[in-house]
Image (cartoon, rainbow, N blue to C red):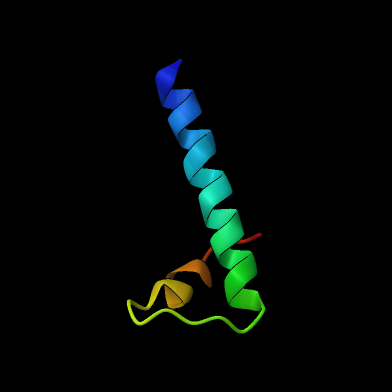
Length: 40
């Protein structure tokens, strides 16, 4: 059950990060280039 909760948290985090990157945000770590591979 904890694994499902953890997966949901990670998915929501990536979704928020992808939304931030779509708005023109940019991280020095290159996180936005990683989120470009996420289909949503």
